[in-house]
Amino acid sequence: MKLNKTSILYALLFGLGVLACINMNAQMIPSKEENIDYLVSFGKNADINWGDDDKIQIYFFSVSRENSAPIYIRIFDPDVGGAIDQINNSVFDTKCSFSLYGGPQSYSHKDARGVNPVGNFRSGIRLSSVTFGKDSEYDGKWYTIGPINPQEGEFDKEMDAYVFKLIIEGLSGDDGNLYRLFLSSSGTNNVKVEGGNAFTYEMTFCLKREKQSVAHFYPYVKSNLEAIKIHTFDYDHDGFIRLYSVAKLFRNLNGSGDGTWAENTQTVVEKEHNTSYDYQIVSSSKFNNDMTIYFTNKYNKAIPFFSNPIGGVPKYKYKVDVNYSFK
Image (tube, rainbow, N blue to C red; front, side, top):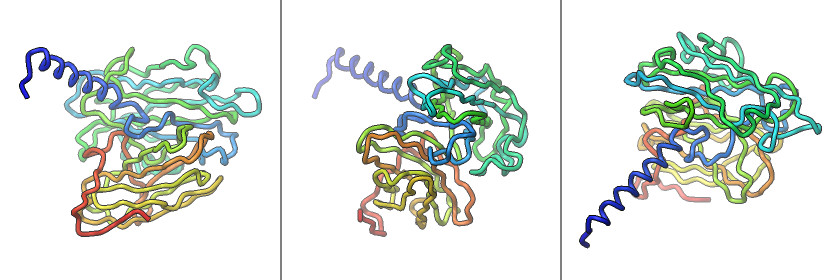
């Protein structure tokens, strides 16, 4: 088929438009790939049956060593009040803090990379901290932390990147604060930071209120990983959990009930090394369901999972030696 100049120009513009959309969503947390609307943090007085096991959430942001331009961490709807957030007992009375850390041991300290906020999980140098209650100025709007010098993060040799830590904590009250994050190169707009990514060791979030909606989680399988275990809390048996990898197709993995934990272990095969897993939670209802998830290796050491899967979303390769099928 021959293409005229108009067709070529249209194709180029379409391609640029696609790239713009990808860039726009590349560092939103939760990301487009994860298909989750909001992270959620409850006030410290909230019952754990709401899905938040410890009222503290920690996210890490990696910025390439080659990036010397200022970065910004933007928070959508950081206040606790309004249509997005979850009210308890008829009044919003919750305060929630967002604290950014950099410098030595902000990421490398073992307590910072656990799934429980114990010990010195606030390691490093606190660069910024802000607390929100009910505040119409930021209800449904963006708040920006920055500008931040990338070299204020802790340098990690393995990632060849500077890493920052953001601790979100429900300080008081019992309401749920729903919010999004964005790693940006602009303080006023969401603009991708080239070579950047975001990851966590435990996530508390709100499933989409749609039947058959699919949430995705992407733990990275290093070459020395022998097994991976998924842990879910307060899933309410709302649908089912399945696993995709380059070598596996599994359905109906064990999921937790109301206010309880559940786990499921999968053996890692060689073909899966240096790829991402795609754990999927498929919702069967439209009701509001907040829950917590994390992953560990066979020694119960937490494994990071990324907003943008390393190596891309895994695709099952049908010509592998090991046969797996949906149950």
